[in-house]
Length: 227
Image (cartoon, rainbow, N blue to C red; front, side, top):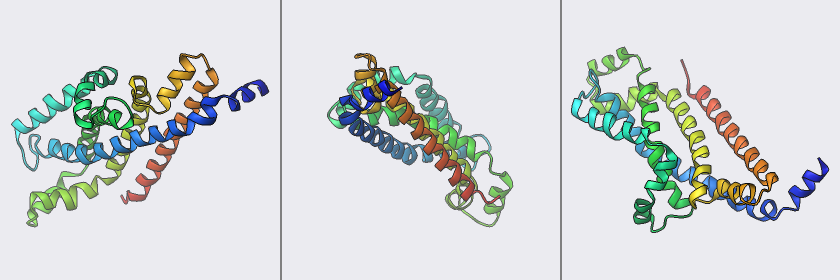
């Protein structure tokens, strides 16, 4: 055990490269998480209200967004998706490597996933509350903004938590193709150079990150749940 810790703290990957790798991972997850919520939340709302019997029923919109765009994107494994998006990423951010470039593929992979979680969360809202708001003269926008989203807030917070946890795992995969972060550190040192202590440290940090996100999300869910 003492030999392990001696090798751990004498490893330059731990002493010099670990902190920048952690910052890159947090940057990837932060940017992609924000983009996912900003785009995925409205997308999930549209999927919900455009379904049969919804507030703004539209079969064409529901099929186009749900069965076509969302389902097709979700069916592509992330390992394949991030490679296929390299040319698109280069056009968007001017490069195909680095945390900013990795955020593009992370966002595109997570947005459909989050949108489906939002749609499922909105379905838990009792239809009677929406009908009551509509009967009192509320517009569709007011019903969504003042009734639907507040009532589904605990489910939405839980959906954000699940999505961020998923992004942490995806970010490690993105590191394998030049995204940087903890995944790249583990691959360069832990796999290619057979330095198992680096791999162990990266795994511990990823587990701690997931636990922290999940703990924070669970506390927020309990705080906003007034049922």
